[in-house]
Amino acid sequence: RVFLRAVNQFTSVLNRVFLDPSNFELQLWNNYFHLAVAFLTHESLQLETFSQAKRSKIIKKYGDMRKEIGFKIRDMWYNLGPHKIKFIPAMVGPILEVTLVPEPELRKATIPIFFDMMQCEFNFSGNRNFHMFENELITKLDQEVEGGRGDEQYKVLLEKLLLEHCRKHKYLAAPGEVFALLVSSLLENLLDYRTIMHDENKENRMSCTVNVL
Image 1 (cartoon, rainbow, N blue to C red):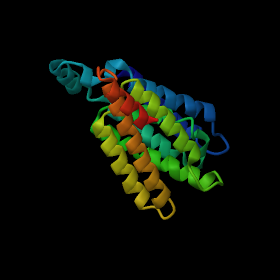
Image 2 (image 1 turned 90 degrees about the horizontal axis):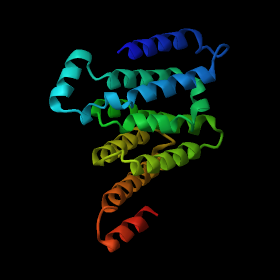
Image 3 (image 1 turned 120 degrees about the horizontal axis):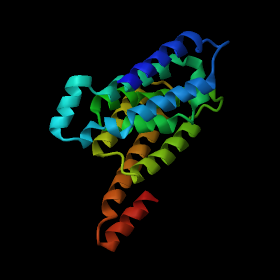
């Protein structure tokens, strides 16, 4: 709780002093995001791993601090405005870590950041595409799922939110939909692969490997 209060102090100083284009400090903002993500994903805050009694006790006394810091990360991202492009693709991995935390409200609040990144790269890169974001998300997703993160609910929500946001956008509707479905099918294959790796049946394992490839 003390750390959370300290991080919240940093956010107000960053917004007040280091957001203006003439005083913008890339390294400071970068450090803030990595600190906030490290806090949010710290093992001592992963309530799902505790017994029901311990979880209830923590929530009653402190609430779910992951949500509080997660909403702050989201707000700070949107505050960046035109500076956002400086954080793509470097921030894709850390934001992915946040969205993979199995807390439904946190996921719903932070997954739309991916669409914002797509839109930002599309508008500011000069190439009218989001290839940097796309490559980074696919690479990091592969690593995270292999490391045991991600689940079926995440796959469904990621596809749903990306499609909803893309379909409202004049230029991203078509490429965005293709990308959302690609990521969803990749995630499905990665989850199947992770499950089947413990299967004794070699044919099943080979079939899953081929699907992922």
